[in-house]
Length: 206
Image 1 (tube, rainbow, N blue to C red):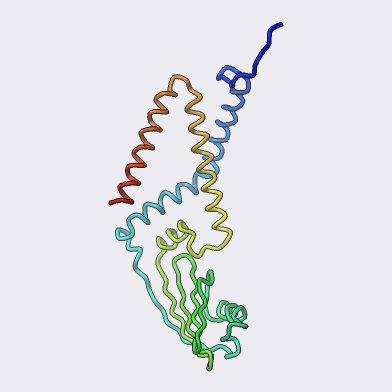
Image 2: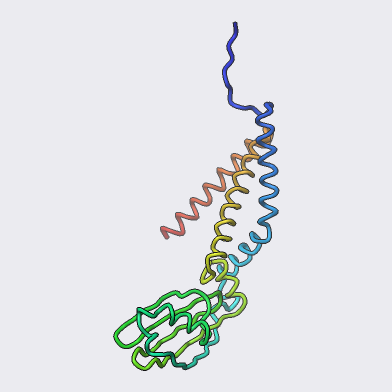
């Protein structure tokens, strides 16, 4: 009686064919689904790398004064104060910081392309707001960085990162599944890995 052993799947086995078909479909549809998002992050990444070319540092400022009930200017009522600033005094985006000292409260709100700093006298409730606004390109680059974007956009960043990993891994598997080009693919991957490592070391150690 002869015995058989389980061997590693080869390109000729049905399991391997199903695997490569699955990888091919995964690669195609994940890449198509994420195409516009990938184009967005590629373009905004270029903008971020050349901020001085596109004038991303340019900003316009606007100052305003206001008054809130002094009872809101305390740590115990800070949530009510935040809602009051959002509703009546043009506060937008995420609350980035809230600092309380003996005489004043300082709050900062950020959203893509915009920053607002509020200073409030805790005794009188008198306050000043400084709103700093930047252009559309800065809004787009802030979206790229997830700056002041909220939870939903950050989840999109997570999904995009996962899609990139899936597309990359499935692409490598597909290339390696072609025997005639496997060696060239491995050489290309090795060269690109070595170049990336060299550039990383140069950037860190220079």
